[in-house]
Image (tube, rainbow, N blue to C red; front, side):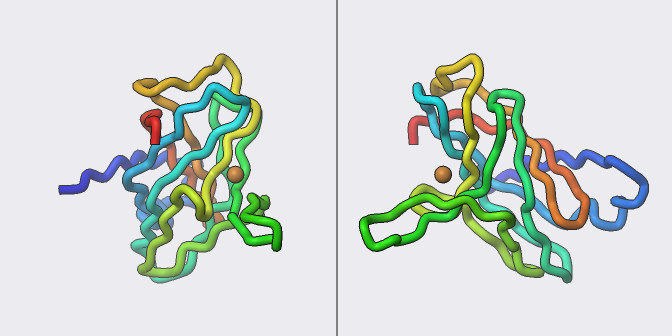
Length: 138
Ligand SMILES: [Cu+2]
């Protein structure tokens, strides 16, 4: 049975209508001894309108980026994108080798298995979700 690790941060009264828009499941951060690492999760849109993930930040990294993986002709490469669209009543799975969140310039590393990383996800409807993502080897 899957658990929902959803904590909604109401930043203003205006966002109240959108508070139940996105649910996040199975989120985790890849263990890393380097300066960057990736975060993965399933984003479920339980609303009747498309919502995009537009930003990510975490206290463990200087910045967060949204990446897709594309074949540039000489192998697969990561490329920054401005948003990840989650279709209405649909879902997107961020997974290794596919679209993912990148945490750039990790502070106070390394991120070892067993640690927990706070993540804040920012959505196009103004909603912000705060998560605690476990660090896993893979
Ligand atoms: Cu990446």
